[in-house]
Amino acid sequence: MADFIFWVIWALIVASAALVAFGNNLIHSVFALMGTFLGVAGIYIFLNADFLAVTQIVVYVGGILVLLVFGIMLTNQISTAQISQSSVQKGLGLVVVLGVAAIILTAVLPHDWVGSTLPMEFTDTVTGIGNLLFTDYLILFEIASVLLLGALIGAATLARKEL
Amino acid sequence: MDHLSSYLVLSAILFSLGLYTVITRRNAVAILMGVELILNAANINFVAFSKFVTHNLDGHLMSVFIIMLAAAEAAVALAIVLNLYNDRGHINVDEANALKQ
Image (cartoon, rainbow over all chains, first blue to last red; front, side):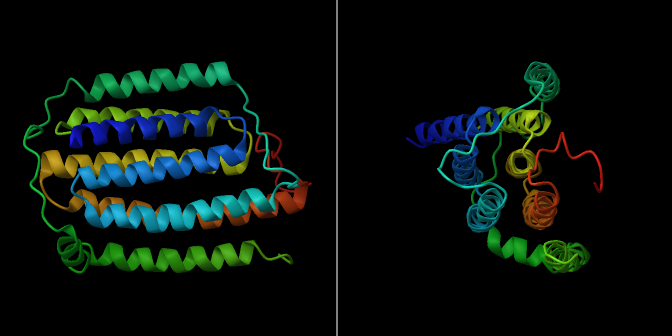
């Protein structure tokens, strides 16, 4: 049963990401992106990452996706739910992307990753992440807070009318 | 679901679709969506290797920082896109080839 759910989520991610990449309607692409984000949250649960799954839903679906929808609504004359978008150089792009995908897969799949047959047993990750954030990753954590403050001020400054 | 390769293949597909979106789309917001796909693919890899290979939480920490970075990047990129729209009336990146007009 868990196996079946895993492959359903797997297919959901691939299908919705394909709609993001190939769809003609921008609104449909954004909602397909929500499917991708929720599917990745499900994958995190299969990977024993409980904290990351919740963070994924809160930050991506609750934050970034809303930002993207705002971006679309503010930069188009909305009359219907149909906002068409176009692509350029589809053929060349497809060739490049298929080449990159082939390189990644041939590099990654034949390799015998040490311990790849022994998955870690599930343990609560919140305690461990909290401990690491305030010990090994403390400097990174502080830099991240400064970066977020800078991004906040920068975005607010850039988005004002009188620049 | 209990083997690393299924996650690696998923991540490679997600990365490729994101790259295709970044390469071919003209709309700046659609390109931003492609970047998010690429970041999600990287996150899946980090967490998958954390479970199957290294057996510790370092990969989870990297994913937390990537999610944080994606949020900051989306906010700044959106501010730039809004300025572009106010300046030109469209956000097609292939026509935005001058800083000021």
